Length: 111
Image 1 (cartoon, rainbow, N blue to C red):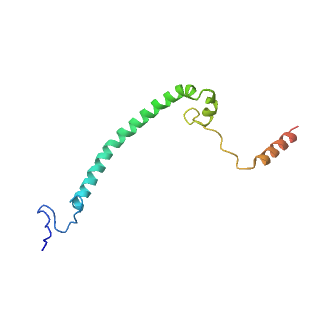
Image 2 (tube, rainbow, N blue to C red; image 1 turned 30 degrees about the vertical axis):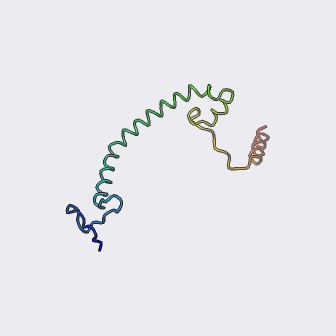
Image 3 (tube, rainbow, N blue to C red; image 1 turned 45 degrees about the horizontal axis):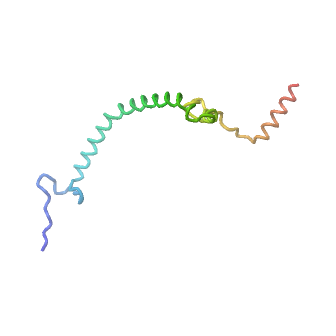
């Protein structure tokens, strides 16, 4: 006959025990709380490092992009967020032919 092991005396009897690690749910909750506190302390420093790294990468990209892309640099510059931070205008919501027709008519009215 097999006897089930009793929980160690430091653990409450009603707490469920993880079969793989042997930890109670209270221990897992405590671990999660401590990890959250640690993360809250690290997050501002990580953000500052990311901003600094971003500035370094940006300056390196601006100086190295013409060498990397060569003849294709002007095409790259049009779509690159680092080289062209303002971006390009969004596409028109109207049909291109319709827009050209209206533009032509405006020019004719102005004569």
